[in-house]
Image (tube, rainbow, N blue to C red; front, side):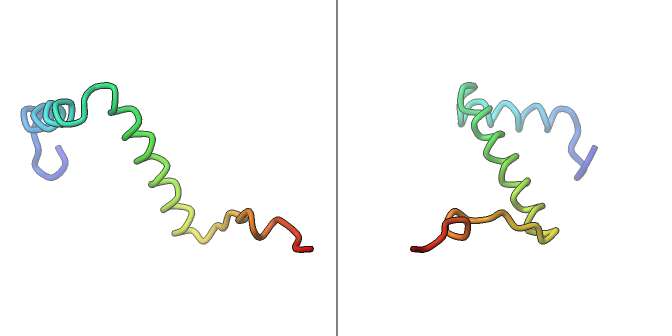
Length: 59
């Protein structure tokens, strides 16, 4: 197991997460975490997404 964590430790961590955030909030947290990781990877590889202000022509 990574970081020397066994099955009992991982189960305890999962139980604490459920108790702290509730089972309905966990998918939202994971979605946010996933999008954060995606943005980090984009920034690390140097990909740029166009901003709304960059795509609009100024009059």
